[in-house]
Image (tube, rainbow, N blue to C red; front, side, top):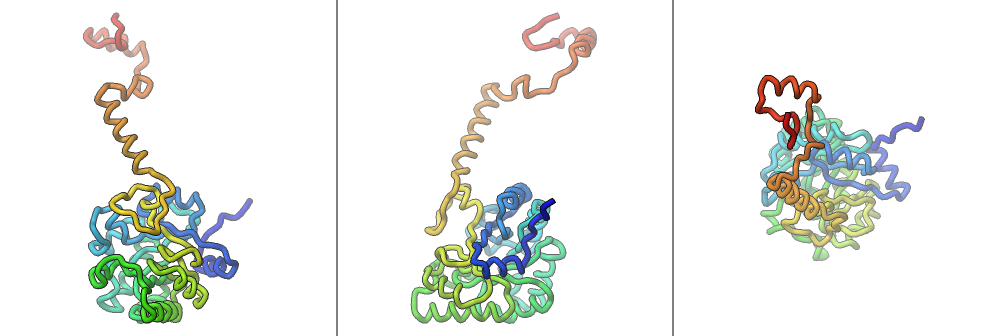
Length: 293
């Protein structure tokens, strides 16, 4: 009997060495997690994007630690093989090292995550180092930092000047040196992402960073065509489930209102002898539709 594949932190590092691409997607619930796992997704990220695609916020900033833990628990129950990573939301690791360790530890202890992800380059080094020393695997995140959207004026491509490019390279190296086992590169021109990927020894996972990263990640509702408020340039919709789902809902509403759902075949029945016995007690009860005794 073939042993079930279980993706671990060393698995990703070995994949980089072999030149094998890493497939990562976001997940927020049990049912989706099951499908992601069955599809062979290597890493499932419970991202703070849940604030936008699940809760309807305009940004990720309102998401709390407790909310990420709640969704991580649900995803954990749907996983057999994939590596589960939980996002550290805004202000869960910026206030103090002690608070960062406590919150990250909760993601593992209460949520069932294997690792956490946090945004930031050189400035995040003390936190990354402390978490790793505490035994918590860390996935870094350089380039666009959505949690800093108010500071940078929105979700903008990073690395547009020589100075910015050099800072990105410095940030990536600092994240690796701090002990991160991998890093997300977001919204960075592909030549810069390629250079980062070649300079660091840990796996890089791109989102809007071109094809030369060691892996790719997308927000699952974007990929499925479920989230339609806007479509980032780098997103490819592999399905149009938003349209299909809307059509299914509309059909259901129509069938209910016209009496087409449910049919008797979709309903529970009684044994005819029991119906007859009951009908003898109450003559107003028909044995079957369009049938009289």
